[in-house]
Image (cartoon, rainbow, N blue to C red):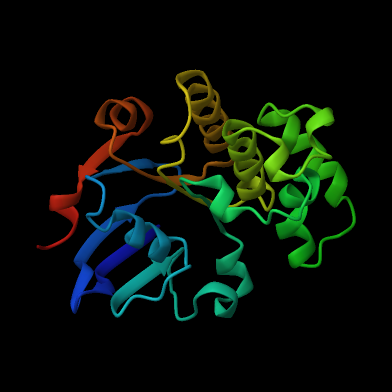
Length: 219
């Protein structure tokens, strides 16, 4: 289970962006977190992805309380969560070719053997042809780059996925394609999903259940 309990995080103008938030995701479950822009849901998503240390509260992952964040999180916990952000150009190293972008987590964890093959296979899964893998982020569209970012999130075969407004900048056909990839992965691996967004119709169609921000966090 992924459990966020009494999370307070992120200060702006002296007040917490997230206050006393509670949310759980069961293994294999898809949960949509619905809220308007600026409410704090992206901050909570970063806490769930072990990328932002909360100021208060606890995160429990697979029965273990998380006590390290980013590179200081235990490797088993750090690699069990894959994350896709809203703006791929802010989360992709502009110097890397797409094949290296996808394989980056493998190489960062010392899994260099077979990294290129894994990147190519996942690229095909998300709809990227071989001809695009040698290009850098500025040479591809937002949709193509987001496909690569999704492949990067899946390359370590995580047990949990956090998709923070993953489709907000994409057209309808690309949105449908990426949601289909995530759902196929969940069915195959039994992964849990936290999908954050402001599109109620998309989240309700995509997820097993959708919770509103006002039901998750206080004030």
